Length: 367
Image (tube, rainbow, N blue to C red; front, side, top):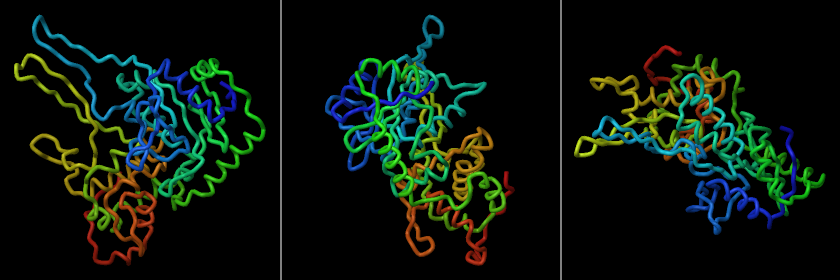
């Protein structure tokens, strides 16, 4: 569908929100403890659409941190009750990098063995994305071409201007919303300001990947046993923060909870993390990644290389959340930096081997 471009004045933003909220349960980024988080929008909500990365990505709306898959009861046979997933959802202010992350999750939860819980929510969700007119110091989305501007895969797209917004329509669902509103066409001055603001955001992006994305698979193969992995993994707490805030991490565990009567219960899924010791544990307490260095290495290479080999889309979109929320900040090259920062990890692996003289690393075979 060819995008239609409208002008949305500051005072008309609430009109758009009201139009969406009539048909959808709407979420948007609101201030929380000095940060921003996706919350259900109410009349008092003040949305932030300048595109700061929220604490948790929008994926938690489509793949909740924990969810009931079904409840079961024994009585007259085996009875199963599944939750209703037909509620219409809308996500305001989702950033370009998070939209690209959802495209990666679509690949993971799609295919031959599609996840019906994810897809029922996904198909009922209106994406009201927001271009990033400013970028955080942790972001490196330009290295992946996942921001600050979104070009497709949205229903509506908002760009903040000095005295309002540009509103672009990208789907029939978005058109149905805009058709209810009396909006003027965007002017050439509006479009020029949009271009200037996004160009400024690109120019202000400080972090860059030191290796071209297409070369990362070979890069990690050649450095799979580089000694730089050792000090990095030694500083890791294995807390899982980096995976919890990542917009493309998708791993979850499934648990059955049986009532004391033993004739009823519920099956639930909850997020899991490959950085936790128990994640790769199997029967008889055997563990495929017991050493912390194996878990640290797995997270890095899976995000930056293996996921693209498997699904065709990278597992990193440069949002910078892992950088911001990692609790470990070791010293690297004379300055304190986040342990989980992919840019810094790659830079570490580019260091000469002489720097790590005497460091022993368990030799493994690269995949």
